[in-house]
Image (tube, rainbow, N blue to C red; front, side, top):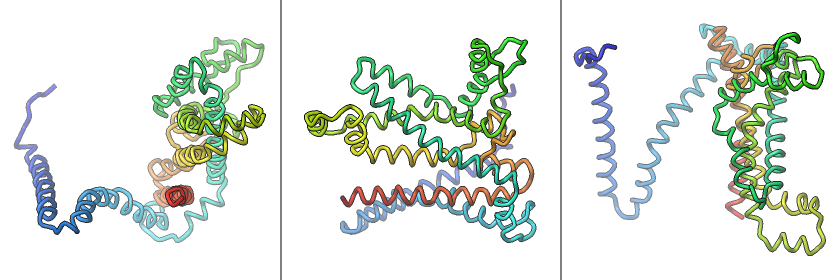
Length: 327
């Protein structure tokens, strides 16, 4: 390893770093000077501007400008040399391979939020106020500490396939063999392979739903619970008529969070199948088109469509929060 550092060779970079530091200090000093000289009535607004300005600048550089550029590229050809109008969007909704991607994304968006919320809710109710509640919650929350890539690698071993005469290394096929069945290639046959990928996402996110919904359940006023019990409500009636209505805001938070996370899903599909065998989703296909196949226009069109899908969810969440504040 060469430990010699050539200051002459690195001088341009060091100068750029020094200029950046000086510019930052100058900006901070100017803002503090303006804040000090501003009238008392205007200090609150100026203070808010000083705090928000860096975030707004970074938001514009990292989100708004790339978003505009991506939208423009979605109307261009694969090499961005000519204008093709809506051809890339027509490809998205007419070609079989693109329709398969949209179908898979729809399956993910429908199944993952519902399964995660349902499993998390049932688990939270079952372990609530039990003796080993903390341990049970810790166990179900542990997968959240694993990255999507790590979880994908783990579950590839779970679904691993070996010929019938060979020793099985995959947990699922080993269980099948123990019960006298034939080992299967779980990730090769569409559309069932998409459901096996969905299980991985549910396994990771169920802990998040459990923690959020369990906290909401504990926040239900004890008076409501006692009144329902005195009225003779059964456990099932308590669940559907007391618990669910009381924690509705938390359920919505989990559903919205999981819907957004599912729409931008990339890691699990990329790690486990690479999008092959009809398992690709929008984010994965966007990567393939833009960076593997050189079809920048199609990749940009998929990115724009993904952004459009997220907008209604975000708008709904913002409106819900505003209504909650006004109430």
